[in-house]
Image 1 (cartoon, rainbow, N blue to C red):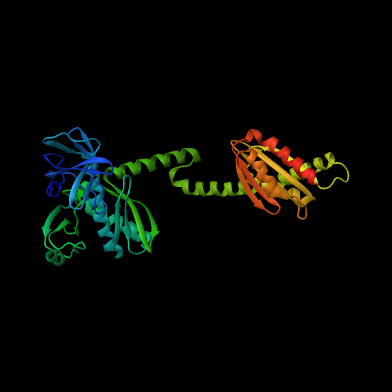
Image 2: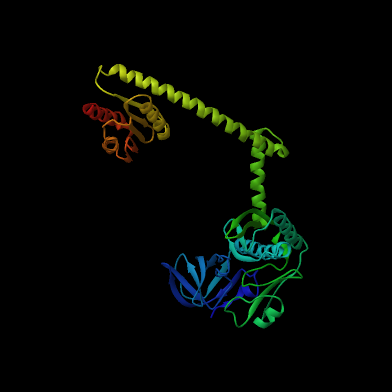
Length: 400
């Protein structure tokens, strides 16, 4: 059994130990030590990282009662010096204790119970068992920060399950012996095996960055301490950039952004109208040219056209306009990084449009499909586009 040192001193970063067992974990060497200050992932808090001798500790996992220190290389024989990454340990103390305080604040202001907790690499989340209002979110954030700034002592003690219940704490499921209680004086008391500070002041500040509906309740995303400073700095940089781009003072950004959005919507509406008229004109031009090239009495026109950079959606709109204007077969293509094809015919014409398309996209090194009178596809050989369209046109004209 490993003597877990961080339970008594979450600030301990260096220690000496000896290897009592050697294992392998997911293809990497791992060791069990007689004593360790490394935190093994549990309860929503990730593991510590650091080093054992010259080997990096890349994971610490509790596996069937053994604490495995997973390494990037094997350890030599003999005693070993352990070092825990100080920044990661401090960050986890800040985030995890901030979670305790924020969870208790939500219990106070909204009677919302925390049913899930995840400490991620960038943000931390708690899942509440009920929806909460914007006012309750603000009130909980304020209440939690008041406790942080009051610098209340944080203490840890081990009690029996019965004593824990008498103190208002619910022991974790399956715990029948000792319960480790973490208490922020006069505010919060929770069973927990994580690493916590000596004072709430070390959390620094708690900033809620997002909330969302989740499984009938609310997921709250937040950051504490140094992470909060980074998040605020990022948002300040974004706001400064928006002030510059929109040429508006900070307080006017919402109104200017709304106006810019409305202007963009109107511009897109006008653009769609112009595109619609342009495609209508292009369809009439193509049909007129195809009729002029066709011999009198030779049947419906076969319209062939290729474009540079057109999206497949615009080709499809143009093809449908063509087949609606007059009886014809429309064979349209566009080239860019890839080639796009849209084939169509007027209702009642005899061509196998999906078959023509399949033959053409094969030459383009791609695929496509459709049914009835419209088919589309594409391929990775845009240089073959004109040849594919030419062959499709020959096949269509031979059937006319």
